[in-house]
Image 1 (tube, rainbow, N blue to C red):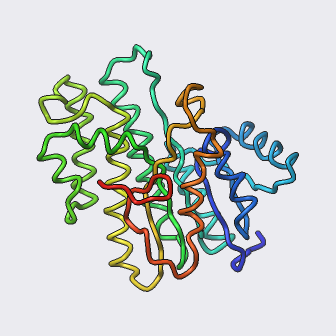
Image 2: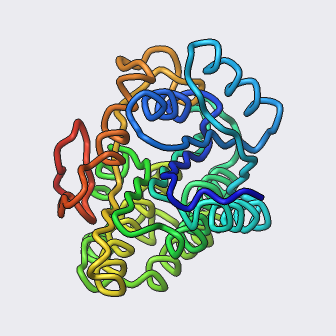
Length: 279
């Protein structure tokens, strides 16, 4: 395999459609380097790359299913081997049950957290070590995370906002939500009645925890890691009544991915409409 250690590279998860595809499209226009569109399904991913090509934009494709640990490890090894790591990582892949979905809350809680929190964490576990100096990591969260946080018990809110929250404690909290949801006891446990909201509380809090970790372990590398809300965007996931187009939804994630060299902030923040939001 030809290595391109000097070529910069950006990777976007879950990017064959919706906000992810809009992010890839914007990076193809603005980022100097290779841009990888990734998807679980090879056919859909390659079709999306062809569609971009017909617009005169060059994206590359790599299979990546964040719910499959082998797929994550294979992709991480590929980018490490070919490019020496990644310069931009945008964790966009996620799921949401429709409001009208009749699946029991216990199922929605387990399935939603499996992808949105635990699989996103697996991505970060395997990709953060290969993020290059000056790298940018963007976790696509949601304004729903801030709303859900306010509906948590004061004890949970304090932990999720705490400067000394560890990754292990956060994982244990997310596991606790799932187990309490399965027993129908999540409200008594101080949790909101939203699996999606809770999953994104986890993503935002994880971003803050890992940003502190990166600053401590690699203080001179200038890596910036943030969570963001793209806004309410017209996608398969959010429906067609949303006010923003996918292109508008891509603006904040792309802004964070392209923070200029030498920038020191935002880092470990929750950002919406290019502004740091209270958490």
